[in-house]
Image: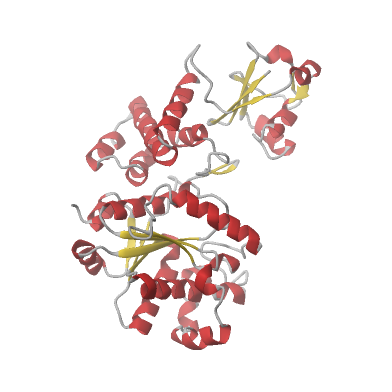
Length: 407
C-alpha cells in the first residue's frame, strides 16, 4: 500500500511539517494514531473543514488510526487563530449540542469504533483541571516571549488579546499530551492556521514525556483570490443538508473558477491523480465537464450517490426544457398570496434567499436577481399569480442559487 505521506504530498495537501523524513518513515513502518481537532462553534461542519476530513480518510485507508477530537473544552475559551477579534462566547449547553452534532457528522466519514479510530471530547480532561496544578505542571514549559511571536497572537496585538484566549495554546498543547498518554498519539494534523499551536503541542509532549511527537499542517481551501473557499453571500457551504441542500453544494462547486478545478479535485475527491491532472488541463467549454465531475464526486462523498445524482439532474434541468426540476430547492405557497401580490423583496426574504429586504434590494440594483430567467431591475416589483408558469416560479439569486415557488 502507498505510504499515506506520499499520497498527501501527491495530492497537494501538505503545507508544513515538523520533521518531514521522520514522519514519512513513521507512517511507513507502523499504524500511527493521529489527531485533528474540531471546535464546536457551530452545529455542522462546512466545506473548509472537509479538507481535514479528507486527510483523515486518506490516513485511515492507509491503516492509521484517527482521533477526531471535539473541542468541547477549548470552545469555552475560543481559538484566536485567524481571528481579528475575540470569538463570541457560547453557552456550555450550546457547545455540548454542537459537539454531539459534529461527532455524529464526522462518524459518517470515518470509522470511529474505539479500535480503528476514536471520537473524543476534550471536555473530559479540561473541564475538571485544577488551575493552579495546571499552571505549575504545564505552564512552566511555555515561554511568554516565544508565544508572543506566534502568528495567532501577533496578529491580535494591536486590537487586543484577552488573557482568556492566551490560555488556548496551553490547552490545545495539553490535548496532544493527554492523547499521547491515553492512546499513544504521535501526530497532530490541522489547517495551516494551526501551525503555532501544533508546534507547541509537539514540543510539550517531548518535554514532559521525553518521546517523539510530530505535527503537520495542510492547505486551507481558498479561491484564486486567496479567500477561504466555501463562503457565499448567504454564508458558509454547510455539510448539514438542512443548512445547505445537496443541490446548492453541487452548484457551488460546479461554478468555481477554472483555475481552482485541478487543486479542488485533488483535495476533495478520491479520483486518481492522473485523472485529476487530465481534467484540470481541460480548457474552454471543456473545463465545465471537469467541474461537473468535481461537483458530483464531492456531493457523493458528503451526501451519498443518490443525492449526488438528484443534484446533478436538478442542475441539468435548469438548462433543459421540460426536464425534471423536482430536486431544485422549492417552497409551496398559498395561491391567495399571489392573487393579492407580494413584493419581490419580501418574497426573497421569506424564502430565506436573503437575510433582509435591504440585502434583496441591493442584489436587485446590482442585477443579481432573475425571475423565470428574466433579470429584474425594479426592486419595487410585485410578484402575482400572472408571473407563474404552470403553477411554478423560478427565482435565481446571483449565478448559483435557485429557488422554485409552487402554488
